[in-house]
Structures are given as structure tokens and as C-alpha cells.
Length: 190
Ligand code: AMP
Image (cartoon, rainbow, N blue to C red; front, top):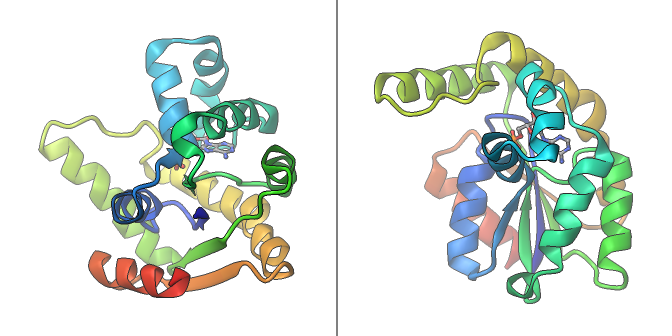
């Protein structure tokens, strides 16, 4: 099954992608995770992306398209995958269509939550991480979050129309508990 998870920062994309990955035994492909790994390894891509990510802006399309195209081509993704955080622009969605050639996506799952809720979720996540001594994401702060939300509204939200026009979009209320959201997602793709 080939799935895309869409949703604003803090909607729970990563958590739900990981749950679906276990349930469906297909890999979770997160461009955010790939980019953070590139930053911490200090690769050329990481060096280009670090400051942009810290500000909460989107990194250039061609950079993430290259990463995801390579990843989708690996053998463990042959049976399907869950894209978490990609595509984020219409140009990325068009590139994904090219990468997939004649393979169609099965579903695009939009996680919907209201904005105030997101701010609390992300700032809570950062506080919890800080208290437990875990690494706090460089972009989990109020300034970067507002840039990330704007990037979502302006650049990513238009993808819902792009995929709805193809009959691929399902929208899920992501303000419920984690387990309920997972159940709703499973029901939607069932
Ligand atoms: P995420 O973990 O999905 O919230 O992504 C963290 C950051 O990585 C984003 O704020 C962007 O700076 C960058 N990023 C991740 N995925 C993409 C993408 N598909 N296109 C552009 N930038 C991305």
C-alpha cells in the first residue's frame, strides 16, 4: 500500500506513520528524519538544510525529491510505504508522480487539528523533551513553529485540493487520542 500522510506540524504525522508502518509492515519514509540525520552527519545536504530547517522554512524541492526518490527505489519499499512529511509542495507532488511512474498512490490521509491545539502540542513536546534530558528539536520553539505553520498553510495545504481532485484524499480528525486516530486511519484505508 502506498500512503501519504499530510498534516500541519504537531498533528501527529510521525506517531501515526510509525503505527501504520508496524500494522502494515511497510516502511515509514520521513523526509524530516532523513534531513535531521543528514544535518547531524554533516553531509552536503545536511549543511544546505540546517539553517533553513532551524528557521522553520521548507528546504528546496530538488533536495528532498532526490532523497525520497533514492529511498523509494530501495527494495524494502517495493511492497509500499508511508510518506511522512513528503510531499509538501505541489511541485514535490508532481515529482512524486514522476518517481512513481505508473504506480498510483492508494490514499492521501490528511490529519486535521486546530492551530491553537498544535501550538500547545509542540511546545509541550519540547518541554517534555527538555525535562527528560532528551534532544529538543531545533525547530520546536514558538518562532520557528509559526513559520512552519505558515509554510503548511501556504505551500502544503493546497495539496489537499490536488489529491482530492484525484479522489485520493481522506481527512481524519487528529484531535482525538493517538489510538483513536490510528483506528480512524485504519478504517479510512480499509
Ligand atoms: P518534519 O520533521 O516533517 O516536521 O520536518 C522538519 C523540517 O524539515 C521542516 O520544517 C522542513 O524544514 C524540512 N522538511 C522536511 N520535509 C520536507 C519537505 N518535504 N520539503 C521541504 N522541507 C522539508
